[in-house]
Length: 196
Image (cartoon, rainbow, N blue to C red; front, side, top):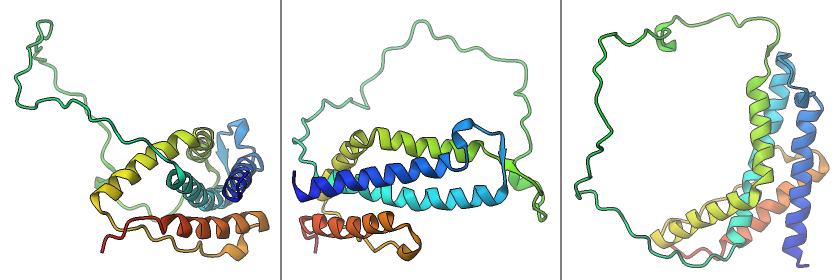
């Protein structure tokens, strides 16, 4: 095994474990209806920090992929007349559209936050989306590699990868992965063609 694949597998394992622990420690796998505000705030901040690491890991995987050139596709002609659908028939409704709830911008500002627990559904959805991204990270990296290929062909400027702030607050394993990802990404981006 090469040094880069060893780092990638170790970083993937570390990030996956941290994401899983972030949800399991507060019992998100049990699908609670509500959770405390402080727990919501803490887990949301942790998932945000782990999302940056996961994005950088997928970006590194995409930069290391060697893709075959795209085969040209046959495009559709916008100006070519379309065949009319024989089954389609416009139905004019006499009943007005049902009214919807008032938009949020027409309501007055809410100045006092509601006390007590908050719904857990948005946090569970974010956690499960990150787990799904971990599960299909190769597919996401391949899609991003195609995008990077288009950027390079268009002469886009090389992306800048700053170090992640507050690494000293992370657990030791995540801090090492964070620093290693930054170094690996800077090295991988040196192959980016100069756009100046």
